[in-house]
Image (cartoon, rainbow, N blue to C red):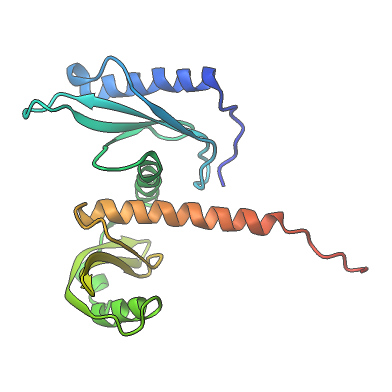
Length: 216
């Protein structure tokens, strides 16, 4: 997990606010916001070399007249901004982590050769049966596939019983998302970020277990 060497306090958050505004001015230029709204600080990161991160909300004018909401990440990480969609701060942090993971590892769209190695129906059936044996699967299709250092992370769109869902299969951390109103690449990045957080939490729990005393 990232090293939490930076104290997460009000001074640090304000320095992140200034850095986030400067980043947005550099990226958005005249469209950049003058101020940021509510925020949420995350005291550690599961990504190597990264650490405390704060997410700020902001809005930008839209042609429809209703301001569009966004999140911007700053801190001991590479700054980036994202459409807020219907995401909570926790979901947005997972999206940021998944995005950073993809950028660092230069994850790209899987080639046809890589995708062809995935038996979509078989893998989704196995995943569904692991949580709901015998549940019906319909409207199955490959929504996206990514090449992660030669491994294939596949996103299938389907209906499990009456519920529309994404299924993450192949070499990806297995799981589901019912947020099918999000593009598959967004759902994948959120899922990947959650998996990184869960792995780090599990690793931390394991590290906290005392080693048995060989003399007892």
